[in-house]
Image 1 (cartoon, rainbow, N blue to C red):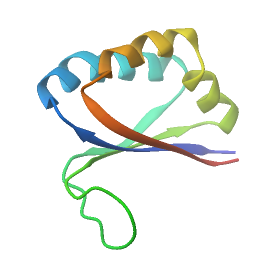
Image 2 (image 1 turned 45 degrees about the vertical axis):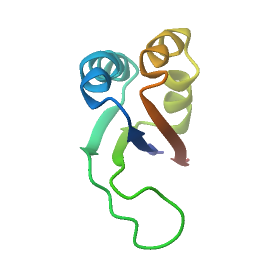
Image 3 (image 1 turned 90 degrees about the vertical axis):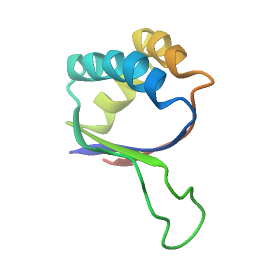
Image 4 (image 1 turned 30 degrees about the vertical axis):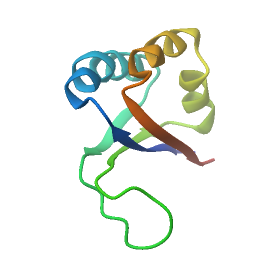
Amino acid sequence: MTAWLVITARIHDREAFINGYGPAAAKLMDQFGGRYVIRAPGAAVLEGDGVDGASVVVSEWPSRTSAMAFWTSPEYAEVKKLREGLADVQVILVGE
């Protein structure tokens, strides 16, 4: 059953984030079977808590298991270091 990682990020240094973390995460995500559904800045919060102007990334995965395999992998732990200090990030996993 399909699963999605829904990420919102308030990016402090967009250039460093996009040129360092972005390509590394995308390459690894592809290796684990994920694909981007949307990557866009400028979110508008219409209700509830959130950050106006945040970037939103939604990735689709074949299953919750495959998304978690990516998220908890040692390889992603290394890639995630590339965004330290560059963004405040919230990640939600939905789907079976």
